[in-house]
Length: 351
Image (cartoon, rainbow, N blue to C red; front, top):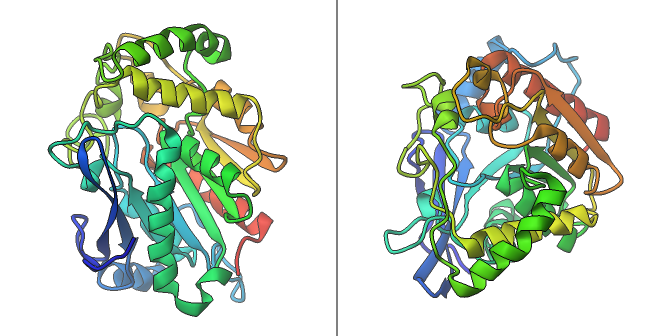
């Protein structure tokens, strides 16, 4: 659908704008997605100016003739569960790498969440095809006649990584590359656990699709990320709740179906880089090791399932990283950004 409302200033401040994307209504009423772009004005120009006299910690000294690693690309980022886009540094990385950076707040998340909606609720991951297509349409209109020649790089975190992988497999040839940040490709209890609970959850979904499920989030991940606790990041806690959104049987059934599809093997039609932490720490009591580990998913399972996304998959394990690798402390972030740069240069995704 169209973008009649036009771009307007975003909550992230100078250098960021947002565009509301109307979608087809569902049983809860009006539905929208929201596209965020990193512009070249204000903060973007300041970052470019700073780049000429100071280099990011993760960057190698470039040869004078070397083009940026993502020169001429369009990047579309999709967030994970109970989340939204707020990482200015990630946007600057891709802009400095030569790309046009966009982030998509999916329906019922973040900027797109309306008061009458069930946060994050859906019953089929394919419903997000409409959100993604609306975003790609807006990006193409921005790019003008040459937009179709620009390589598309999909960047997804956690559930967003699962969503984008499934979309790419259904739309082979449209993405030039996928960069997956701890993608939720398998249930935490492994494939055997998923197969055991899937019929039970499916039965509950048929009886009471929106019934409440137990909240297993103890708030440790928020503690590792939020600046006012032990983390480094400021964000809207209404859009990224401290113990996550409430989950429902129909929602989990859709997630498990996505996991099963990946487990059977798919081909996303493009090279894949999967970034994961060096280790997982999943336990019911706090430990300072949680500040340098994935405390949401099992990284060995992610690495293993990533190999089922196609024939060209690279897995980079980042020591000291959190579940969201790009929210880790600076040494791990530096290693992650360096890994992305090396991989992009190796594959030559640029125009």
